[in-house]
Length: 276
Length: 315
Image 1 (cartoon, chains in turn brown, red):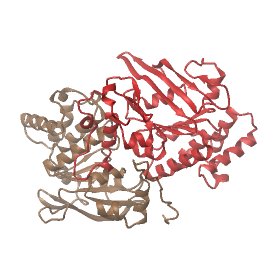
Image 2 (tube, one colour; image 1 turned 90 degrees about the vertical axis):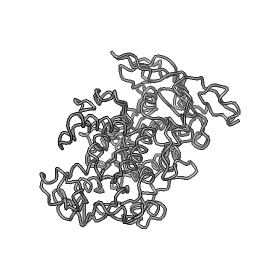
Image 3 (spheres, chains in turn green, blue; image 1 turned 90 degrees about the horizontal axis):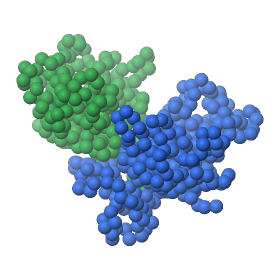
Image 4 (cartoon, one colour; image 1 turned 60 degrees about the vertical axis):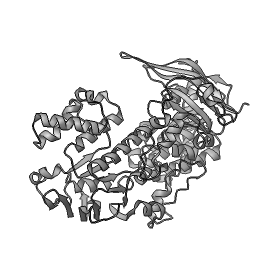
Protein backbone atom coordinates (compact mmCIF):
# COMPACT_ATOMS: atom_id res chain seq x y z
CA UNK A 1 0.00 0.00 0.00
CA UNK A 2 1.47 3.30 -1.05
CA UNK A 3 1.21 6.25 1.31
CA UNK A 4 -0.90 8.23 -1.08
CA UNK A 5 -2.60 11.30 0.44
CA UNK A 6 -5.96 9.96 -0.78
CA UNK A 7 -5.68 7.21 1.80
CA UNK A 8 -4.29 9.22 4.68
CA UNK A 9 -3.53 8.10 8.18
CA UNK A 10 -6.08 6.33 10.31
CA UNK A 11 -4.00 5.70 13.43
CA UNK A 12 -0.89 7.24 14.99
CA UNK A 13 0.72 5.49 17.95
CA UNK A 14 3.50 7.35 19.76
CA UNK A 15 5.66 6.14 22.63
CA UNK A 16 3.12 3.60 23.86
CA UNK A 17 4.18 1.67 26.99
CA UNK A 18 2.44 -0.77 29.28
CA UNK A 19 3.81 -2.87 32.11
CA UNK A 20 2.21 -5.45 34.35
CA UNK A 21 3.38 -5.47 38.00
CA UNK A 22 6.52 -3.64 36.98
CA UNK A 23 7.29 -6.04 34.13
CA UNK A 24 7.31 -4.12 30.85
CA UNK A 25 5.10 -5.76 28.21
CA UNK A 26 5.14 -2.96 25.63
CA UNK A 27 7.87 -0.33 25.64
CA UNK A 28 7.94 2.91 23.71
CA UNK A 29 6.16 1.69 20.59
CA UNK A 30 5.47 4.16 17.80
CA UNK A 31 3.96 3.60 14.35
CA UNK A 32 1.35 4.89 11.91
CA UNK A 33 -1.36 3.04 10.06
CA UNK A 34 -2.67 4.17 6.68
CA UNK A 35 -6.32 3.84 5.82
CA UNK A 36 -7.17 0.62 3.90
CA UNK A 37 -3.83 -1.04 4.53
CA UNK A 38 -3.07 -4.24 6.40
CA UNK A 39 -0.35 -3.86 8.99
CA UNK A 40 1.03 -7.12 10.34
CA UNK A 41 2.37 -7.41 13.89
CA UNK A 42 4.66 -10.41 14.35
CA UNK A 43 6.82 -11.78 17.14
CA UNK A 44 7.05 -14.73 19.49
CA UNK A 45 4.67 -15.29 22.37
CA UNK A 46 5.45 -12.77 25.08
CA UNK A 47 6.76 -10.21 22.59
CA UNK A 48 3.88 -7.86 23.45
CA UNK A 49 1.84 -7.96 20.25
CA UNK A 50 -1.51 -8.69 21.90
CA UNK A 51 -0.83 -6.22 24.74
CA UNK A 52 -0.05 -3.59 22.10
CA UNK A 53 -3.33 -3.96 20.22
CA UNK A 54 -5.31 -4.23 23.44
CA UNK A 55 -3.76 -0.99 24.66
CA UNK A 56 -4.58 0.71 21.35
CA UNK A 57 -8.23 -0.33 21.56
CA UNK A 58 -8.27 0.61 25.26
CA UNK A 59 -9.21 -2.91 26.28
CA UNK A 60 -6.42 -2.20 28.76
CA UNK A 61 -5.10 1.21 29.80
CA UNK A 62 -1.62 2.14 28.55
CA UNK A 63 0.87 3.61 31.07
CA UNK A 64 2.37 6.17 28.73
CA UNK A 65 2.13 7.33 25.13
CA UNK A 66 -0.56 8.56 22.78
CA UNK A 67 -2.97 6.79 20.43
CA UNK A 68 -4.46 9.14 17.87
CA UNK A 69 -7.35 7.80 15.81
CA UNK A 70 -9.06 9.47 12.86
CA UNK A 71 -12.70 8.94 13.77
CA UNK A 72 -15.73 10.05 11.79
CA UNK A 73 -15.67 13.17 13.99
CA UNK A 74 -12.02 13.93 13.27
CA UNK A 75 -8.84 13.12 15.17
CA UNK A 76 -9.23 11.91 18.77
CA UNK A 77 -6.72 10.81 21.40
CA UNK A 78 -7.84 7.50 22.83
CA UNK A 79 -5.40 7.06 25.71
CA UNK A 80 -7.04 9.51 28.13
CA UNK A 81 -10.69 9.03 27.23
CA UNK A 82 -13.18 7.80 29.80
CA UNK A 83 -15.08 4.57 29.22
CA UNK A 84 -18.17 6.61 28.41
CA UNK A 85 -16.37 8.79 25.88
CA UNK A 86 -15.04 5.66 24.19
CA UNK A 87 -18.44 4.09 23.55
CA UNK A 88 -19.25 5.90 20.28
CA UNK A 89 -15.70 5.22 19.05
CA UNK A 90 -16.04 1.49 19.66
CA UNK A 91 -18.32 1.38 16.62
CA UNK A 92 -15.34 2.33 14.50
CA UNK A 93 -12.81 -0.09 16.02
CA UNK A 94 -13.58 -3.78 16.24
CA UNK A 95 -11.75 -7.01 16.93
CA UNK A 96 -11.82 -10.50 15.43
CA UNK A 97 -10.57 -13.09 17.90
CA UNK A 98 -8.53 -16.25 17.56
CA UNK A 99 -10.83 -18.86 18.97
CA UNK A 100 -14.27 -18.93 17.37
CA UNK A 101 -15.28 -21.52 19.98
CA UNK A 102 -14.57 -19.25 22.93
CA UNK A 103 -15.62 -15.86 21.57
CA UNK A 104 -19.28 -16.61 20.71
CA UNK A 105 -21.96 -16.90 23.38
CA UNK A 106 -23.27 -20.48 23.13
CA UNK A 107 -26.73 -19.49 24.34
CA UNK A 108 -27.37 -16.90 21.66
CA UNK A 109 -28.57 -17.61 18.13
CA UNK A 110 -26.49 -16.42 15.23
CA UNK A 111 -28.99 -13.65 14.62
CA UNK A 112 -28.71 -12.44 18.23
CA UNK A 113 -24.91 -12.63 18.11
CA UNK A 114 -24.63 -10.56 14.95
CA UNK A 115 -27.42 -8.13 15.93
CA UNK A 116 -26.24 -7.42 19.49
CA UNK A 117 -23.67 -4.72 18.63
CA UNK A 118 -26.41 -2.79 16.76
CA UNK A 119 -28.66 -2.94 19.82
CA UNK A 120 -25.86 -1.85 22.16
CA UNK A 121 -25.10 1.13 19.94
CA UNK A 122 -28.81 1.83 19.33
CA UNK A 123 -28.56 1.57 15.56
CA UNK A 124 -31.80 1.45 13.58
CA UNK A 125 -35.15 -0.10 14.42
CA UNK A 126 -35.85 -3.82 14.54
CA UNK A 127 -36.61 -4.08 10.81
CA UNK A 128 -33.50 -2.13 9.79
CA UNK A 129 -31.34 -4.20 12.12
CA UNK A 130 -32.66 -7.44 10.69
CA UNK A 131 -31.95 -6.17 7.19
CA UNK A 132 -28.39 -5.25 8.25
CA UNK A 133 -27.88 -8.72 9.77
CA UNK A 134 -29.07 -10.44 6.60
CA UNK A 135 -26.83 -8.23 4.52
CA UNK A 136 -23.82 -9.00 6.73
CA UNK A 137 -24.61 -12.71 6.56
CA UNK A 138 -24.41 -12.51 2.78
CA UNK A 139 -21.07 -10.67 3.06
CA UNK A 140 -19.53 -13.49 5.12
CA UNK A 141 -21.12 -16.10 2.83
CA UNK A 142 -23.36 -17.87 5.33
CA UNK A 143 -26.79 -19.24 4.47
CA UNK A 144 -29.86 -17.39 5.69
CA UNK A 145 -31.09 -20.43 7.65
CA UNK A 146 -28.04 -20.02 9.91
CA UNK A 147 -29.79 -17.16 11.71
CA UNK A 148 -31.93 -19.28 14.02
CA UNK A 149 -29.16 -21.74 14.89
CA UNK A 150 -26.67 -21.74 17.78
CA UNK A 151 -22.84 -21.62 17.50
CA UNK A 152 -22.40 -25.31 18.40
CA UNK A 153 -24.09 -26.28 15.14
CA UNK A 154 -21.27 -24.74 13.09
CA UNK A 155 -17.76 -25.79 12.11
CA UNK A 156 -14.70 -23.76 13.17
CA UNK A 157 -14.54 -21.90 9.86
CA UNK A 158 -18.24 -21.07 9.92
CA UNK A 159 -17.97 -19.83 13.51
CA UNK A 160 -15.13 -17.57 12.48
CA UNK A 161 -17.45 -16.17 9.77
CA UNK A 162 -20.03 -15.44 12.48
CA UNK A 163 -17.34 -13.69 14.56
CA UNK A 164 -16.35 -11.62 11.52
CA UNK A 165 -19.98 -10.69 10.84
CA UNK A 166 -20.40 -9.52 14.46
CA UNK A 167 -17.24 -7.44 14.26
CA UNK A 168 -18.17 -5.82 10.94
CA UNK A 169 -21.91 -5.18 11.47
CA UNK A 170 -21.15 -1.72 12.90
CA UNK A 171 -19.12 -0.88 9.79
CA UNK A 172 -15.86 -0.16 11.64
CA UNK A 173 -12.85 1.46 9.99
CA UNK A 174 -10.18 -0.25 12.05
CA UNK A 175 -10.36 -4.01 12.54
CA UNK A 176 -7.88 -5.80 14.78
CA UNK A 177 -7.43 -9.46 13.83
CA UNK A 178 -5.69 -11.16 16.76
CA UNK A 179 -4.53 -14.55 15.45
CA UNK A 180 -7.88 -14.76 13.66
CA UNK A 181 -6.91 -17.63 11.35
CA UNK A 182 -4.43 -19.47 13.60
CA UNK A 183 -6.85 -22.05 14.97
CA UNK A 184 -8.18 -23.07 11.56
CA UNK A 185 -7.27 -25.96 9.26
CA UNK A 186 -5.29 -25.03 6.15
CA UNK A 187 -8.22 -25.32 3.75
CA UNK A 188 -10.56 -23.33 6.00
CA UNK A 189 -7.79 -20.84 6.76
CA UNK A 190 -7.43 -20.12 3.04
CA UNK A 191 -11.17 -19.43 2.77
CA UNK A 192 -11.16 -17.06 5.75
CA UNK A 193 -8.06 -15.22 4.48
CA UNK A 194 -9.77 -14.75 1.10
CA UNK A 195 -12.92 -13.56 2.88
CA UNK A 196 -10.96 -11.00 4.96
CA UNK A 197 -9.30 -9.69 1.80
CA UNK A 198 -12.62 -9.47 -0.09
CA UNK A 199 -14.29 -7.65 2.81
CA UNK A 200 -11.37 -5.23 3.02
CA UNK A 201 -11.92 -4.26 -0.64
CA UNK A 202 -15.72 -4.11 -0.35
CA UNK A 203 -15.88 -2.17 2.91
CA UNK A 204 -12.59 -0.24 2.82
CA UNK A 205 -11.32 -1.81 6.05
CA UNK A 206 -7.99 -1.19 7.73
CA UNK A 207 -6.53 -4.26 9.40
CA UNK A 208 -4.09 -4.61 12.27
CA UNK A 209 -3.17 -8.23 11.76
CA UNK A 210 -1.53 -9.92 14.74
CA UNK A 211 -0.11 -13.33 13.84
CA UNK A 212 2.69 -15.71 14.55
CA UNK A 213 2.36 -17.52 11.21
CA UNK A 214 4.75 -15.67 8.95
CA UNK A 215 3.50 -17.19 5.70
CA UNK A 216 0.00 -15.88 6.44
CA UNK A 217 1.46 -12.45 7.22
CA UNK A 218 3.50 -12.49 4.03
CA UNK A 219 0.36 -13.20 2.04
CA UNK A 220 -2.09 -10.76 3.61
CA UNK A 221 -0.07 -7.77 4.90
CA UNK A 222 1.23 -4.64 3.20
CA UNK A 223 3.60 -3.63 5.98
CA UNK A 224 4.95 -5.46 9.03
CA UNK A 225 6.08 -4.56 12.55
CA UNK A 226 8.44 -7.06 14.16
CA UNK A 227 8.22 -7.09 17.96
CA UNK A 228 10.73 -8.47 20.42
CA UNK A 229 10.57 -8.05 24.19
CA UNK A 230 7.90 -5.37 23.99
CA UNK A 231 9.70 -3.21 21.43
CA UNK A 232 9.37 -2.81 17.68
CA UNK A 233 12.77 -3.94 16.41
CA UNK A 234 12.04 -3.55 12.71
CA UNK A 235 9.27 -2.30 10.47
CA UNK A 236 8.85 -2.03 6.74
CA UNK A 237 7.02 -3.28 3.70
CA UNK A 238 6.37 -7.00 3.48
CA UNK A 239 8.90 -7.26 0.66
CA UNK A 240 11.64 -5.55 2.70
CA UNK A 241 11.02 -7.54 5.86
CA UNK A 242 10.82 -10.95 4.19
CA UNK A 243 13.43 -10.53 1.46
CA UNK A 244 15.87 -8.16 3.09
CA UNK A 245 15.61 -8.24 6.89
CA UNK A 246 18.02 -5.87 8.64
CA UNK A 247 17.69 -6.93 12.24
CA UNK A 248 19.07 -10.17 13.69
CA UNK A 249 15.80 -10.90 15.45
CA UNK A 250 13.86 -10.72 12.17
CA UNK A 251 16.44 -13.04 10.59
CA UNK A 252 16.02 -15.46 13.49
CA UNK A 253 12.23 -15.52 13.03
CA UNK A 254 12.41 -16.02 9.27
CA UNK A 255 15.07 -18.72 9.51
CA UNK A 256 12.76 -20.74 11.77
CA UNK A 257 9.96 -21.12 9.22
CA UNK A 258 10.03 -24.64 7.76
CA UNK A 259 9.83 -24.46 3.98
CA UNK A 260 7.19 -26.64 2.29
CA UNK A 261 9.91 -27.53 -0.25
CA UNK A 262 11.79 -30.66 0.89
CA UNK A 263 14.87 -29.45 -1.00
CA UNK A 264 15.13 -26.27 1.10
CA UNK A 265 16.43 -27.60 4.43
CA UNK A 266 15.54 -25.93 7.71
CA UNK A 267 18.58 -24.13 9.12
CA UNK A 268 17.39 -22.06 12.04
CA UNK A 269 19.82 -19.40 13.25
CA UNK A 270 21.13 -19.65 16.80
CA UNK A 271 19.68 -17.12 19.23
CA UNK A 272 22.89 -16.99 21.28
CA UNK A 273 25.17 -16.57 18.28
CA UNK A 274 23.06 -13.61 17.20
CA UNK A 275 23.38 -12.13 20.68
CA UNK A 276 19.62 -12.19 21.33
CA UNK B 1 14.81 -59.02 9.35
CA UNK B 2 12.36 -57.15 7.13
CA UNK B 3 12.89 -53.49 6.41
CA UNK B 4 9.30 -52.69 7.35
CA UNK B 5 8.89 -52.04 11.06
CA UNK B 6 5.12 -51.57 11.05
CA UNK B 7 2.50 -52.78 8.61
CA UNK B 8 -1.03 -51.34 8.99
CA UNK B 9 -3.75 -53.07 6.97
CA UNK B 10 -7.50 -52.34 6.61
CA UNK B 11 -7.60 -50.63 9.98
CA UNK B 12 -11.13 -49.56 10.90
CA UNK B 13 -12.26 -47.64 13.98
CA UNK B 14 -15.81 -46.67 14.90
CA UNK B 15 -16.99 -44.21 17.52
CA UNK B 16 -20.45 -45.30 18.63
CA UNK B 17 -22.50 -42.60 20.39
CA UNK B 18 -26.18 -41.91 21.00
CA UNK B 19 -26.19 -39.81 17.86
CA UNK B 20 -25.02 -42.69 15.70
CA UNK B 21 -21.79 -44.30 14.59
CA UNK B 22 -18.87 -42.30 13.22
CA UNK B 23 -16.38 -44.15 11.06
CA UNK B 24 -13.19 -42.55 12.32
CA UNK B 25 -10.94 -44.83 10.27
CA UNK B 26 -11.97 -46.73 7.13
CA UNK B 27 -9.59 -49.34 5.67
CA UNK B 28 -6.43 -47.46 6.61
CA UNK B 29 -3.27 -49.10 5.38
CA UNK B 30 0.40 -48.09 5.09
CA UNK B 31 3.89 -49.42 5.80
CA UNK B 32 6.47 -47.75 8.00
CA UNK B 33 9.99 -48.34 6.65
CA UNK B 34 12.47 -49.10 9.43
CA UNK B 35 14.81 -46.30 10.44
CA UNK B 36 12.88 -43.67 8.46
CA UNK B 37 10.46 -40.88 9.23
CA UNK B 38 6.89 -41.49 8.06
CA UNK B 39 4.61 -38.46 8.27
CA UNK B 40 0.83 -38.64 8.40
CA UNK B 41 -0.57 -35.34 7.20
CA UNK B 42 -4.19 -34.27 7.31
CA UNK B 43 -6.66 -31.75 8.67
CA UNK B 44 -8.75 -32.14 11.80
CA UNK B 45 -11.04 -35.12 11.56
CA UNK B 46 -8.77 -36.91 9.11
CA UNK B 47 -8.02 -39.71 11.59
CA UNK B 48 -4.29 -39.11 11.91
CA UNK B 49 -4.27 -39.10 15.72
CA UNK B 50 -6.72 -42.01 15.92
CA UNK B 51 -4.29 -44.02 13.78
CA UNK B 52 -1.45 -43.26 16.20
CA UNK B 53 -3.63 -44.14 19.18
CA UNK B 54 -4.47 -47.51 17.58
CA UNK B 55 -0.77 -48.32 17.28
CA UNK B 56 -0.30 -47.55 20.99
CA UNK B 57 -3.61 -49.28 21.75
CA UNK B 58 -4.83 -46.24 23.66
CA UNK B 59 -8.14 -45.78 21.81
CA UNK B 60 -10.65 -44.62 24.40
CA UNK B 61 -14.31 -45.71 24.42
CA UNK B 62 -16.65 -45.01 22.65
CA UNK B 63 -13.91 -45.53 20.06
CA UNK B 64 -13.25 -49.17 19.11
CA UNK B 65 -11.03 -50.97 16.63
CA UNK B 66 -13.53 -52.97 14.58
CA UNK B 67 -11.21 -54.45 12.00
CA UNK B 68 -7.77 -54.60 10.45
CA UNK B 69 -4.29 -55.50 11.60
CA UNK B 70 -1.15 -53.74 12.76
CA UNK B 71 1.88 -56.01 12.34
CA UNK B 72 4.86 -54.88 14.36
CA UNK B 73 8.31 -56.31 13.71
CA UNK B 74 10.60 -55.07 16.49
CA UNK B 75 14.28 -55.93 16.44
CA UNK B 76 14.27 -56.76 20.15
CA UNK B 77 11.63 -59.49 20.06
CA UNK B 78 9.48 -61.70 17.82
CA UNK B 79 7.00 -59.92 15.56
CA UNK B 80 3.43 -59.67 16.77
CA UNK B 81 0.09 -58.23 15.78
CA UNK B 82 -0.96 -55.25 17.91
CA UNK B 83 -4.78 -55.13 17.56
CA UNK B 84 -5.26 -58.71 18.81
CA UNK B 85 -3.17 -58.34 22.00
CA UNK B 86 -5.25 -59.13 25.09
CA UNK B 87 -5.53 -56.49 27.81
CA UNK B 88 -3.27 -58.50 30.11
CA UNK B 89 -0.76 -59.51 27.48
CA UNK B 90 2.68 -58.50 28.85
CA UNK B 91 3.66 -57.37 25.36
CA UNK B 92 1.15 -54.51 25.67
CA UNK B 93 3.07 -53.08 28.62
CA UNK B 94 6.31 -53.67 26.71
CA UNK B 95 4.85 -51.84 23.72
CA UNK B 96 3.70 -48.68 25.49
CA UNK B 97 6.64 -46.55 26.35
CA UNK B 98 9.12 -49.36 25.78
CA UNK B 99 9.10 -50.47 22.15
CA UNK B 100 6.96 -47.56 21.01
CA UNK B 101 6.71 -44.21 22.73
CA UNK B 102 4.78 -41.09 22.06
CA UNK B 103 5.23 -37.32 22.24
CA UNK B 104 2.02 -35.30 22.37
CA UNK B 105 1.15 -31.75 21.36
CA UNK B 106 0.82 -30.36 24.86
CA UNK B 107 3.82 -31.33 27.02
CA UNK B 108 1.93 -30.82 30.29
CA UNK B 109 -0.44 -33.68 29.40
CA UNK B 110 2.56 -36.00 29.52
CA UNK B 111 4.26 -34.48 32.55
CA UNK B 112 3.14 -34.65 36.16
CA UNK B 113 3.22 -31.27 37.91
CA UNK B 114 4.17 -32.78 41.27
CA UNK B 115 7.37 -34.66 40.38
CA UNK B 116 10.73 -33.27 39.31
CA UNK B 117 11.70 -33.74 35.68
CA UNK B 118 14.58 -36.04 36.70
CA UNK B 119 12.18 -38.20 38.65
CA UNK B 120 9.84 -38.52 35.67
CA UNK B 121 12.52 -39.40 33.13
CA UNK B 122 14.11 -41.88 35.56
CA UNK B 123 10.72 -43.46 36.22
CA UNK B 124 10.33 -44.20 32.51
CA UNK B 125 13.57 -46.20 32.72
CA UNK B 126 12.59 -48.00 35.93
CA UNK B 127 9.24 -49.03 34.39
CA UNK B 128 10.78 -50.80 31.46
CA UNK B 129 14.27 -51.94 32.42
CA UNK B 130 15.87 -53.77 35.32
CA UNK B 131 18.27 -51.12 36.53
CA UNK B 132 18.82 -49.49 39.92
CA UNK B 133 17.65 -46.01 40.89
CA UNK B 134 21.12 -44.56 40.72
CA UNK B 135 21.73 -45.90 37.22
CA UNK B 136 18.28 -44.67 36.12
CA UNK B 137 19.01 -41.13 37.35
CA UNK B 138 22.40 -41.18 35.64
CA UNK B 139 20.83 -42.20 32.33
CA UNK B 140 18.03 -39.65 32.79
CA UNK B 141 20.61 -36.89 33.22
CA UNK B 142 22.48 -38.05 30.12
CA UNK B 143 19.30 -38.09 28.02
CA UNK B 144 18.19 -34.67 29.28
CA UNK B 145 21.57 -33.23 28.31
CA UNK B 146 21.28 -34.88 24.93
CA UNK B 147 17.96 -33.14 24.23
CA UNK B 148 19.57 -29.81 25.03
CA UNK B 149 18.88 -29.15 28.72
CA UNK B 150 21.98 -27.54 30.18
CA UNK B 151 22.95 -26.84 33.81
CA UNK B 152 21.71 -30.38 34.36
CA UNK B 153 22.64 -30.85 38.04
CA UNK B 154 20.26 -28.05 38.99
CA UNK B 155 17.60 -28.49 36.31
CA UNK B 156 17.11 -32.21 36.93
CA UNK B 157 15.64 -31.34 40.33
CA UNK B 158 13.28 -28.71 38.97
CA UNK B 159 9.54 -29.11 38.33
CA UNK B 160 7.85 -28.82 34.91
CA UNK B 161 6.21 -25.49 35.82
CA UNK B 162 9.68 -23.97 36.14
CA UNK B 163 10.36 -24.79 32.48
CA UNK B 164 9.24 -22.97 29.32
CA UNK B 165 7.00 -24.74 26.77
CA UNK B 166 9.94 -25.63 24.54
CA UNK B 167 12.00 -26.96 27.48
CA UNK B 168 9.05 -29.05 28.65
CA UNK B 169 8.73 -30.58 25.20
CA UNK B 170 12.44 -31.42 25.36
CA UNK B 171 11.82 -33.23 28.66
CA UNK B 172 8.95 -35.19 27.09
CA UNK B 173 11.21 -36.15 24.18
CA UNK B 174 13.86 -37.29 26.67
CA UNK B 175 11.21 -39.39 28.47
CA UNK B 176 10.11 -40.88 25.16
CA UNK B 177 13.62 -41.74 23.99
CA UNK B 178 15.20 -42.89 27.23
CA UNK B 179 14.09 -46.51 26.76
CA UNK B 180 15.40 -46.56 23.18
CA UNK B 181 12.02 -47.18 21.50
CA UNK B 182 12.02 -48.71 18.05
CA UNK B 183 9.21 -46.36 17.02
CA UNK B 184 8.78 -42.81 18.22
CA UNK B 185 5.31 -41.40 17.54
CA UNK B 186 5.12 -37.59 17.52
CA UNK B 187 1.55 -36.24 17.48
CA UNK B 188 1.75 -32.55 16.54
CA UNK B 189 4.64 -32.03 18.98
CA UNK B 190 5.39 -28.47 17.86
CA UNK B 191 1.92 -27.11 17.14
CA UNK B 192 1.64 -25.31 20.49
CA UNK B 193 5.12 -23.77 20.22
CA UNK B 194 6.48 -20.54 18.76
CA UNK B 195 8.01 -20.87 15.31
CA UNK B 196 11.54 -20.35 16.69
CA UNK B 197 11.07 -23.02 19.35
CA UNK B 198 9.39 -25.27 16.79
CA UNK B 199 12.50 -25.01 14.62
CA UNK B 200 14.69 -26.03 17.58
CA UNK B 201 12.49 -29.03 18.42
CA UNK B 202 12.24 -30.12 14.78
CA UNK B 203 16.01 -30.03 14.30
CA UNK B 204 16.40 -31.89 17.61
CA UNK B 205 14.01 -34.65 16.50
CA UNK B 206 15.73 -34.80 13.10
CA UNK B 207 19.24 -34.97 14.58
CA UNK B 208 18.29 -37.57 17.20
CA UNK B 209 16.56 -39.69 14.57
CA UNK B 210 19.69 -39.68 12.41
CA UNK B 211 21.85 -40.47 15.43
CA UNK B 212 19.68 -43.25 16.87
CA UNK B 213 18.25 -44.37 13.48
CA UNK B 214 14.94 -45.28 15.09
CA UNK B 215 11.68 -45.21 13.14
CA UNK B 216 9.50 -42.13 13.58
CA UNK B 217 5.80 -41.66 12.89
CA UNK B 218 5.20 -37.93 12.72
CA UNK B 219 1.64 -36.62 12.76
CA UNK B 220 1.05 -33.06 11.63
CA UNK B 221 -1.18 -30.72 9.66
CA UNK B 222 1.80 -28.53 8.68
CA UNK B 223 3.22 -29.16 5.21
CA UNK B 224 6.41 -27.25 6.10
CA UNK B 225 7.07 -29.67 8.95
CA UNK B 226 6.41 -32.64 6.66
CA UNK B 227 8.82 -31.31 4.05
CA UNK B 228 11.59 -30.87 6.62
CA UNK B 229 11.30 -34.17 8.47
CA UNK B 230 9.60 -36.87 6.45
CA UNK B 231 11.06 -39.55 4.21
CA UNK B 232 7.64 -40.94 3.43
CA UNK B 233 4.23 -39.21 3.53
CA UNK B 234 0.75 -40.60 4.13
CA UNK B 235 -2.06 -38.17 3.27
CA UNK B 236 -5.30 -38.75 5.19
CA UNK B 237 -8.75 -37.24 4.78
CA UNK B 238 -11.92 -38.09 6.70
CA UNK B 239 -10.62 -41.37 8.04
CA UNK B 240 -9.12 -42.66 4.81
CA UNK B 241 -5.67 -42.71 3.20
CA UNK B 242 -5.71 -40.87 -0.12
CA UNK B 243 -2.05 -40.87 -1.15
CA UNK B 244 1.23 -42.44 -0.04
CA UNK B 245 4.64 -41.69 -1.49
CA UNK B 246 8.10 -40.31 -0.82
CA UNK B 247 8.21 -36.75 0.47
CA UNK B 248 9.30 -35.44 -2.94
CA UNK B 249 6.63 -37.41 -4.81
CA UNK B 250 3.82 -36.19 -2.58
CA UNK B 251 4.91 -32.56 -2.13
CA UNK B 252 6.41 -31.89 -5.56
CA UNK B 253 4.19 -33.91 -7.89
CA UNK B 254 1.00 -34.74 -5.98
CA UNK B 255 -1.46 -36.97 -7.84
CA UNK B 256 -4.59 -36.91 -5.69
CA UNK B 257 -6.73 -33.75 -6.10
CA UNK B 258 -6.99 -33.41 -2.31
CA UNK B 259 -3.19 -33.42 -1.91
CA UNK B 260 -2.96 -30.81 -4.66
CA UNK B 261 -5.55 -28.69 -2.84
CA UNK B 262 -3.80 -29.03 0.49
CA UNK B 263 -0.56 -27.75 -1.06
CA UNK B 264 -2.24 -24.95 -3.02
CA UNK B 265 -3.89 -23.59 0.14
CA UNK B 266 -0.55 -22.77 1.83
CA UNK B 267 -0.38 -18.96 1.98
CA UNK B 268 3.38 -18.68 1.43
CA UNK B 269 3.22 -20.28 -2.00
CA UNK B 270 0.48 -18.16 -3.56
CA UNK B 271 1.35 -15.03 -5.53
CA UNK B 272 0.69 -11.91 -3.51
CA UNK B 273 -2.50 -10.03 -4.21
CA UNK B 274 -4.26 -13.10 -5.54
CA UNK B 275 -6.79 -15.08 -3.55
CA UNK B 276 -5.54 -18.34 -2.12
CA UNK B 277 -6.59 -21.54 -3.77
CA UNK B 278 -8.98 -23.41 -1.51
CA UNK B 279 -9.14 -27.18 -1.44
CA UNK B 280 -12.68 -27.00 -2.82
CA UNK B 281 -11.54 -24.92 -5.80
CA UNK B 282 -8.67 -27.29 -6.62
CA UNK B 283 -10.66 -30.46 -6.13
CA UNK B 284 -13.50 -29.20 -8.34
CA UNK B 285 -16.05 -31.85 -9.28
CA UNK B 286 -14.06 -34.84 -8.02
CA UNK B 287 -15.85 -36.47 -5.09
CA UNK B 288 -13.00 -36.95 -2.65
CA UNK B 289 -15.25 -38.50 -0.01
CA UNK B 290 -15.94 -41.49 -2.28
CA UNK B 291 -13.75 -44.46 -1.36
CA UNK B 292 -11.57 -46.05 -4.02
CA UNK B 293 -9.12 -48.91 -3.46
CA UNK B 294 -5.46 -47.86 -3.37
CA UNK B 295 -3.70 -48.23 -6.72
CA UNK B 296 0.09 -48.50 -6.93
CA UNK B 297 1.55 -46.36 -9.67
CA UNK B 298 4.67 -47.09 -11.70
CA UNK B 299 6.86 -44.90 -9.49
CA UNK B 300 5.82 -46.83 -6.38
CA UNK B 301 3.43 -44.36 -4.86
CA UNK B 302 -0.10 -45.35 -3.90
CA UNK B 303 -3.21 -43.33 -4.49
CA UNK B 304 -6.92 -43.80 -3.87
CA UNK B 305 -8.51 -42.82 -7.17
CA UNK B 306 -10.52 -44.55 -9.92
CA UNK B 307 -8.15 -46.43 -12.21
CA UNK B 308 -9.09 -44.49 -15.35
CA UNK B 309 -8.20 -41.22 -13.62
CA UNK B 310 -4.60 -42.20 -12.88
CA UNK B 311 -3.72 -43.67 -16.27
CA UNK B 312 -0.78 -41.84 -17.72
CA UNK B 313 -0.01 -40.10 -14.41
CA UNK B 314 3.50 -40.39 -13.05
CA UNK B 315 4.32 -43.46 -14.95
